[in-house]
Image 1 (tube, rainbow, N blue to C red):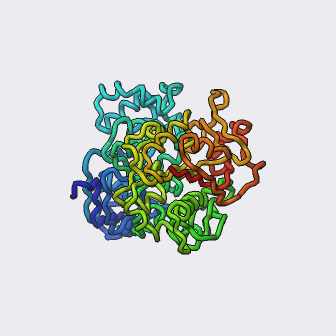
Image 2: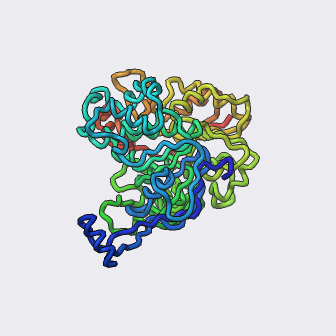
Image 3: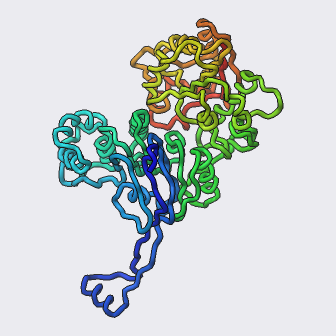
Length: 497
């Protein structure tokens, strides 16, 4: 196995024997076997799966129920031995595969933390040292001495996740465990996964949530009816799977509605931009072909037309990758279509870590003066107490004529508002506290540090009076996913040094 490979699955197949009729006892089993009346049906759960997962990669596995996703994860974890083929894993593995596995329902949470930790190979002294951080993360102090048979599945998931990730494993296996928790817990787990990613942990995650897979994963495997249908880039694989889902009649599959029909400036296709029915954050609608959001497509278009000044008809990141080969690019987000199309370039750099870590880095960028030609900044500008410091840092590391490209949410018709009142705390996205609600005057803040800046209104989905009042409806916002609460038009800010 190569040094850069964390997991190698070589032509793995998994067969199960399914009895054709019920056998009530050992006596019946022996009699039927002697009479040669014992028949089994061969069930193929996984057929000839062959792939590699690179070290430090977040690798997603998707597919419909019963397709073999969990079986494949159990084979990688060593819980099941494959019928044919082999699996090689480099380093220690922390599996989060079945809720309740490794727990005793009659024992308290306190006792189960030590029990499960022992099963994962942790010493008692180590668990004692990490006990407080485990319970803090799981938020179970009030229920610590209660038998876990009285816990909800979400509470068990909190505890299992906290124990498995208390140290940095080489490989973390996650199977649908994030689906049982509440929204805030899911965001908390995603943050922890991003922290592990930043530290080099390889993560293999099975989920039915395409949005979760798209936000976390570098590559995705799609398995359908035991066979691997596709392995590739996150957006391409997820959208191929989403297109198949949409054609099914299953009522549990969320219906997608078309927001726009136009050219995608990431992949260059004339396509539909779609989002789940009921969502109001329409700039998050994604391209049917490549998964690019409306706001990311708009950001790409504005940079290609206004930044590169490309005027020869259609413009897309895919078509014009050569235009970026000699440019130095800093992406403040470690995922998305800009990474998909530009991440392979020698001059591409992405900030690592979770949202908080990247916020800290942007206040003190570890780069020399005049390093970059382009800085891409999506969303994160809402989370700074002193955003002017960030603008100054971006200005410092940009070359003369370099561009800072922002896709921050703008409250149109309003001035920028800074949130320093703890009584009016507002959270958005991954649970990050919002310090700044940007208004139409964002360019004034950019120009104070030396930029020349302009806001480009790309898509208008709402009138000004429809934009959500975050203070007034704060309690409501906590109970709903951001897709179904926040309303913003798609605007792009281009600031040139």
